[in-house]
Image 1 (cartoon, rainbow, N blue to C red):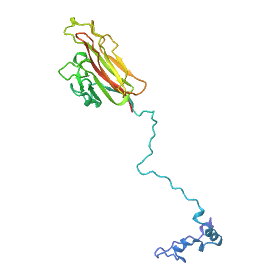
Image 2 (image 1 turned 30 degrees about the horizontal axis):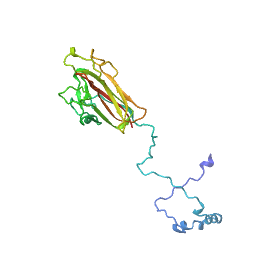
Image 3 (image 1 turned 60 degrees about the horizontal axis):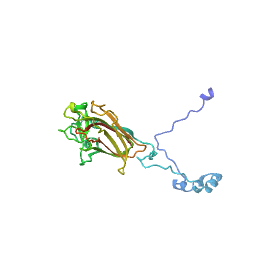
Length: 257
């Protein structure tokens, strides 16, 4: 322990004087010829090694700022797969739709009466539940209709494989005692891009006549592939003096993007 204590202590340097370093050779010379002041063996090695003896370094491949590699989605995997419902009571943002509004302006799909290329309306259906439905008749006229008055054509932005609509047939006799048995049924037809009818559905319930019938029922068409570009719905005509007509509501379709 005494040997350790008797060691000479380091004396701090006089920091009051500026330090100076004497270089025998300039820095530029050292950089140009580092082997000049090295040992003979090191000088020999440095003099025989050049940058060409080392393989070039591969720079990392950088993407431009703010970019990312594209996400590959297989074509058979849909990104959006939903059933869209137009209940005609509210628009796509949940706001109430007034009686008489143009249906295509509210929902963004083309809806026309093919008989005269006329408009299609959102209508209040007072006698069959009180909610809104869809009709070719403007306010001031009963919303129910049949083919001699026209139909509703709905054109889809993207082909679909499934569409449905609710229908409620009625017989507009002037008096219940004069009610007749009529055969006209509500129907829903589906067409492809070539205008070919590829599916059809008819009202399967009891028609009004001797009774009021079965009321609201869903008509649905479905095909194996997404090939439906347009649907048409109305009610058949028959030879009865007071033919059946139909109310329509709740249009839905399968949307795949």
